[in-house]
Image 1 (cartoon, rainbow, N blue to C red):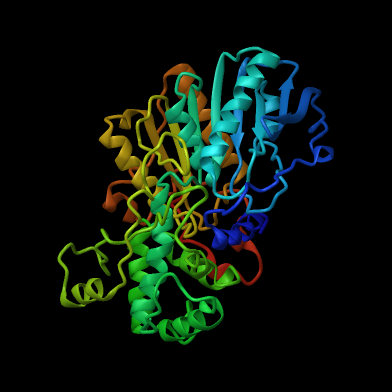
Image 2: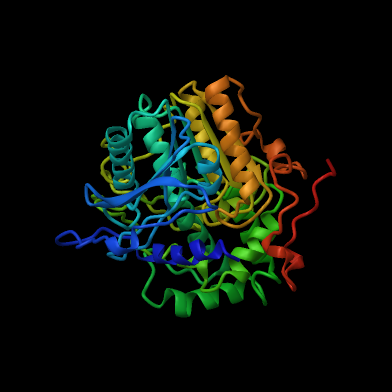
Length: 443
């Protein structure tokens, strides 16, 4: 599956940690920046290096005055800085939109730098081509985190935001990775403690999986069934496509992927300490708020980790800034409901924060019935963008899904409304039919 390229690249997340010593010598290979026409549409194209980051800009000759910024996802910890074309490039230039994308001036999980470099490129565009009549910020995965930061930090410079598969819950993502691994250790009885030893993936994880099922994740022991239920609740609640997502992320994606996401030391670039924690989590195996003895015993037994006092200190957009929910421009987000890498939980966390700022009227969220990370079809992305533009420019607020209502999320048809039902999917390949989600009702 084409989208797995992004997923496999994200394995480097296991090495997340504060960088000691001098900053790395990041570089842009400028021979890779030029890009040609596409779809036979003549355009003005510009590329180069600005504030240490590579960039690409494309402006159609029939420019409609709107600019669409693109924020790419996590690129690992390598030294070369690379630039994406906007995934909607053909649609955008065919419809008169200009677009621009930055490599950022550093890699690693550093959405603060990504936000600053993306905004700097917006300013650069304004000076080079003229101030747009409308400017939109879009981004995927870590780029979705960046999109949230940009929308909140510079609302006067942007008119609408479209994060897709975004890390809108910031630190809550890394807490979820911690939850997954500590719950597995507790329920399996293997009981290794965080931070895990160097042989965690080679020795501990195989023993853990064996205790959770004779053929984890396809055949589970009672402990494995409990683990699966806990992961469902910690990743977004009871919902369609979780079953397929659990099999995919634990059985199809190679390399003990979700276990590997918990093997770091709990630090992030330029942070003053450990940022992950589960000291405030009440774990459950079902949706009943009452805790039976088994859940009480589990909560007492699981290892508790508390972030360092300065680990999550809010300091503007330094380090890894949180998305506060203080939204002042329209935002339309999109998320696959079965993703267990950047889970649907991210949408729920952000919706709660926006509600706390009395800004829910500016946020619309949509679910699609897939389990891949950022595995959207072109029609899904185009529809989302067009609906955002219509909201911003015509005042027509689009429909969305109620991500904070557990009953709505658990409905068997949740995610059907905004799913492209015509395009081929990953599970249409031979031998993968068992991953196909239940069918949506006919239109």
